[in-house]
Amino acid sequence: MITYHPKLSMIIPFYNEEENVERVVLELQQVLEKEQIKYELILVNNGSTDKTGWLLDDLAKRNSGIKVITVSINHGYGWGIINGLRWACGDYLGFMGGDGQIDPSDVSKVFNTLLEGKYHLCKVNRCQREDGPIRKLTSHIFNRAFVYTFKVNVGDINGSPKIMSRTCYEQLNLCAKDWFLDAEVILKSQYLNFSIGEVPVAFHRRMGGHSSVRIRTVWEFIKNMAFYRKRGVFYESSDFMWGKRDPA
Image 1: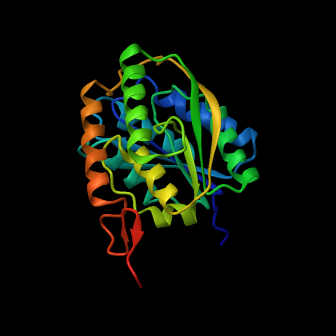
Image 2: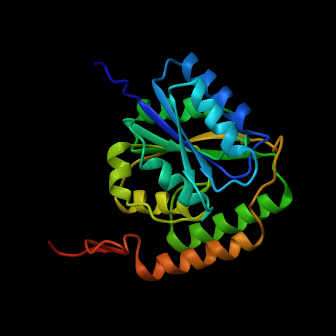
Image 3: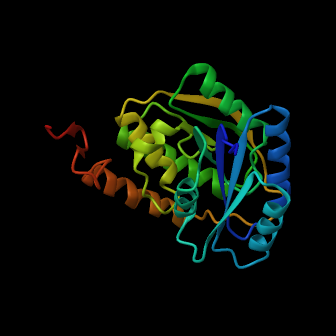
């Protein structure tokens, strides 16, 4: 029996995105198939209370390359992604939002750049943004504070899609349940000296649904940064501490 093995697994969490689900999924499938990329889409119903779950199940019935993972209670953007990553079978694993603000062709651009540059991790850099003033302000404050605190040499920390090799993923030990997951990926990748590529893209305005990013999200970022700065990037592991590795 021949088993289908995807080259790329893309995890997409959806939280009350009934207006965007079909467009996001079908357009991404079209691009990946045109590029002849062997893929699987792991669609996470991240505690939705609208028709999102039903729409995801219907899409899965129509395409064997789709898996649907259900998180009954929404514990945050990061938790949805972490649950999806656990089911990924691809050689390369990526994640992106389900709000439709990223052009699906940018997924293939990031993936091809990852392969061509032999990077461990590749991501977008949203050079042009069409989202609202609150989202722009939140992102600006967070990026400035993050770069100042951790001295990272990466722009647009929260830019996704992010795609990484399986080796990279297996060493990151991701655990952030909220929006800090993007930052956790960058922090741990930098600490482990993983190479990071970036692709400039445009970030489009939402065509439907509502963003869950608010000004209070900045406070969540600040608390997380303080926690990681104090406890260390690999605080759950006895092998790593911030700025040093324990002797073997």
